[in-house]
Amino acid sequence: MTSPRTVSAINHTYWNFANGTGNDYAEAALKSGHAIFMYDQIGEGNSDKPDGIQEVQIGTEIAVASALIDNLPSLLKFGKIVGVAHAHGRVVMIAPIAERGNIFDATVGTAAGLAALNIQIASQAAPEMWLSIKDTSYTVSAGPTNDQIAYYFYPFFEEKVLLEVQQGRGLLSLGILLTLPTNSVAQNYTHPVFVVTGEHDFFHVCRAGQCNVPQSNFPSIPAAVQSLFPSASKFDVDIVENTGHFIFMHNSGPDVINSIQTWIDQAL
Image 1 (cartoon, rainbow, N blue to C red):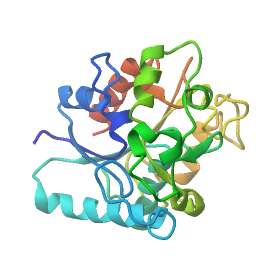
Image 2: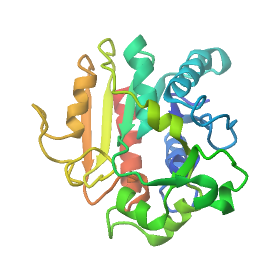
Image 3: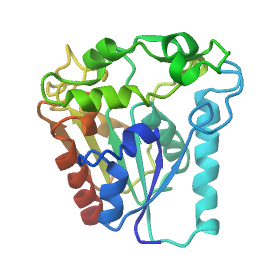
Image 4: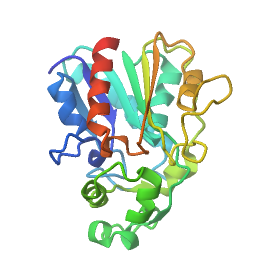
């Protein structure tokens, strides 16, 4: 295995978008010498899909992520671990950091929030993918029109990318939505942090899709994330122009992906 090793709790469609366009984070990371550990969260992909309200909750995801982080050193040989997460995956990543401090050598968070999400029952909205899922607590995003508004900033993306992402959109359980906590403060985390957000992220809790505006004593809404990492040795923010929530799927995606690899190299 190469070093450092990047640990990501991810949806493979977003992080491993292998269409040869440069939007594939995993491919770029490997080319940069950063090995990747990927897994399907419970209720997604090839993982089990138990009751989507009673069993698939944020607490469950956090427990699974923590166990994987704890066991990685005994299973694999590598140098350093970088936590990388997107949207609600950031909540899953921040929770064990807040509880235990420096479990990662560096941390990268892209986007956050669920403000503009319009969801529908998975088996009804996307029967071509999820007809076998009888549990109505499993949902998917409503479709191309909703997703374009929520996740993309027109016209700075390719339509074929939007449609291809649609074909692989993942599940989201009601249990996750009902148990999303407020972010905890990682008081004892002292390693570097990098926050990357599209300037026009309607899905992020931004004002009318404008993230590059002051909040409290911070110059922008993404910069305010620093309040969750008050002891970080280094805190960097990249607000990407002409970009929405699905950062990597925009025309800016390849450059952003490469900038993250560069940041990781410099941070470690």
